[in-house]
Length: 266
Image (cartoon, rainbow, N blue to C red):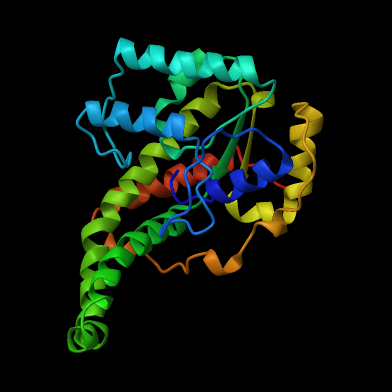
């Protein structure tokens, strides 16, 4: 799922020597350290989404996504070229979650490193990131309007923004994680490793050992602490009060409980 620490973890894998893409999405306001997203897969996913009249962000739920023959052949070509150039390779791109069944067919011998982050942390991060663009607009104004924003309007506007968007972001979190769960239920246990986002700082050596000893990836150990920056982790507030649909909260908590059955505990 978006905002689940996948950029951080792909940064770590990149430093361990994994080929994660020839052209990677650069850093921006939403991700100061870089996204580490393979642009070829990113652009393909965006193209598929927009051709279905869905937002290119991939913030969708309860939608069927159609893929044209042309788009399917383009994906096959990208995969074929990468297979011809590299003995081991991978990619990170959150929208991949929406196409997992397709990729299982296209790359049947692939392995999956699944990163799970709880819904309060993810929804908080999405809200904080999107509100920051609103905040930046007002902070760029002249002195007096800027003061009015900081001392009188910002707090109320932020509360409204959270009320207006928290539920939608939670639905996206559920959609993505349900896609992942559906795949995990079908995969042989030896083809995936699922870990909690919060654990990697303490168990990177165990994960590295799994990748190299179980999956036989040729990598060089690089300490996760070298890429982990606590200052970039968002503070988490209770988002439940911003959700009006109690059934939605219940569903999110049920998804979390289902996921715990698959998480590796170190």
